[in-house]
Amino acid sequence: MALLEVQDLTTSIVRRSGSVPIIRNVNLNVDKGETLGIVGESGSGKSVTMLSVMGLIPSPPLAITDGAIRLKGRDLVGADEKTMQAVRGADMAMVYQDPMVSLNPVMRIGRQIEEGMTAHHVGKNEAQQRTLEVLGEVGIPDPPRVRDLYPHELSGGMRQRVMIASALALSPDLLIFDEPTTALDVTIQQQILYLVRELQRSTGVAVVWITHDLGVLARLVDRVAVMYGGRVVEVDDIEPLFSEPRHPYTEALMASVPGMHDDERAPLRQIPGSPPDVNHMPPGCPFQPRCEFAIERCTREMPPMLSHGTGESACWVPREEWK
Ligand SMILES: Nc1ncnc2c1ncn2[C@@H]1O[C@H](COP(=O)(O)OP(=O)(O)O)[C@@H](O)[C@H]1O
Ligand code: SF4
Ligand SMILES: [Mg+2]
Image (tube, rainbow, N blue to C red):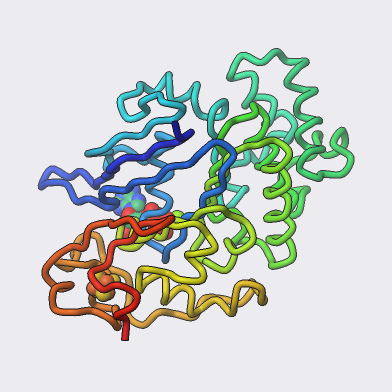
């Protein structure tokens, strides 16, 4: 059994006039201790997918309109808010792009981490001790001093470490990072990536890493799901995905990465055209208006996800016939 199973998940904007899906039929599995990357341009549905898993989509206007989410076999779509509060933090935790959004500016950071634990019925002394422990685990020097600081007294990189410490506090099985390093400079990004990899090795925690930058994933993840227009269009192990992508969109993203063992800091080159608007999805394949390999069928019919070796992809034209 996978740690996290997302099956045919559809999350929609529900309006009185009808509902518009923003992610459609998303399938994802994360095994215990595994690291999955989710990559795609801005607006492709990465955050909505994982916020749906966390039970944190803004509702209304959003709602899960179809599909199943199971964590350790437990159904989360039908779960009430009390259950979700118990699951969040203890079983899975999410770290966001901007720590200043998640941190309370007028509360000392130690207290913030402790409160996350006491809300889950951890005793005060134990919470204080654990706070020092996790601050150490994320590489913060002098935890007893840093515990008593306010968020603005820390650098961006240190604040991100505090967020990770807080997410680790209750030893969850799954950590979700939503573009956690995009606001940071390159050196700090790489330090944080390195830290997460080390944490994953030492604690066995499974990681979902959301990014718009495929290059970032090269040294970090076991498997990658590529999202486009609210759908997963390709999923595969990292090696075959980089060496032989099966979806033209993955290929286009790849072309913008200067090589797996090269400099992973180079920014993405733009793919011509723009991503589809959820309110005006083209018929057929969502990538068709931008795809250099499109055939007539692509304008009419949505390609299904088909398995091939280690992965799956949704494209009418096999890689061998791309030209
Ligand atoms: N609260 C919301 N109301 C309406 N549309 C939303 C809301 N949140 C996200 N969307 C839309 O859903 C799509 C996917 O968003 P998101 O998951 O945030 O993309 P990503 O994280 O890949 O950049 C976007 O088109 C976005 O405009
Ligand atoms: S189905 Fe057609 S349009 Fe879509 S990615 Fe494949 S070739 Fe391109
Ligand atoms: Mg996002």
